[in-house]
Amino acid sequence: MSRPAHIGQEEGADWDTRLVLPEWEMLPDIGLYMDQVITLMERTFSPALPKGEITKSMVNNYVKVELIPRPVGKKYDREHLALLMMIGVLKQALSMESIAGMLALLCAQGVQSGYTRFVREVDQLEQALEQGRVDLSIGRDSPQEKAMHAGVTAAVCTISANRLLARARRDADEARQG
Image (cartoon, rainbow, N blue to C red; front, side, top):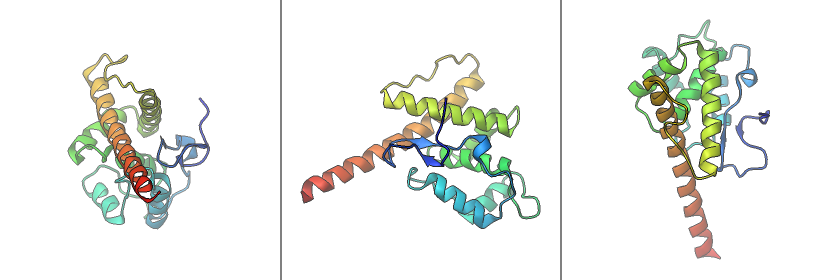
């Protein structure tokens, strides 16, 4: 499936209608310093996610609690960025302990593979939400697959609920003014 080359929102859609994460190949393949990482996260998540902010302190804490590996020479590579993208989405609905478990499930075969699965899962869930149907068990046999799908579903549904609430508030404000 062809995806937009830009980060954060789908072409032709309102900024608040659909979360689109960059594919692995679209993540920078050079090391980024902390300020550059924060800028990339802001551009990816803002304004699509209600709690999408990732601060320097958060990144440092994620390193400290070993959600992400230490940077190499103060630079964060593609794997760091992919992990931070997944954390940014999952933290919308899950605790740090649950996120750690989710990342372990997703990345059991490596971060690139896990991130690619995660992006595909988010895309499929966004499409299912647009059609008004989300199923927790479609094609999931193992408890690990069900847990991974349920966790990503919780995060994406939370994001969707918050976007819909923001849209409803905006529509109500416009109705009062107009």
